[in-house]
Image 1 (tube, rainbow, N blue to C red):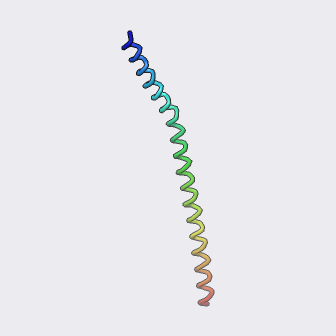
Image 2: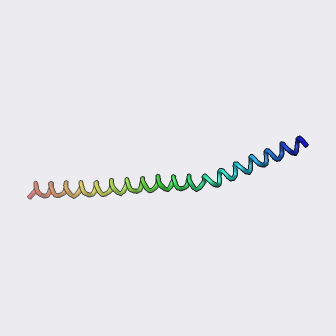
Image 3: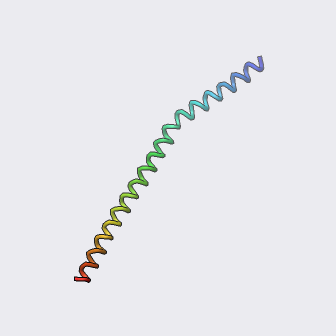
Amino acid sequence: MKSIIIAASVLGATAAGVFWYMKNRHRADAALNDVKEAARNAYNRMYKQGKKAARKTNAMVNESLA
């Protein structure tokens, strides 16, 4: 009887752990997607600013050479 109760407790704890993992897996994936999106946005902004700075620099160089 005692071993049946212990086995049921272990099985229940395992099932609860699997359920908790499956439930929170989507939240972790969503958080990872948010991080990826933030990194992508930061890269795009940095790229835009770099191109803008390059255009300004080229304009200044061309103006000084003219």
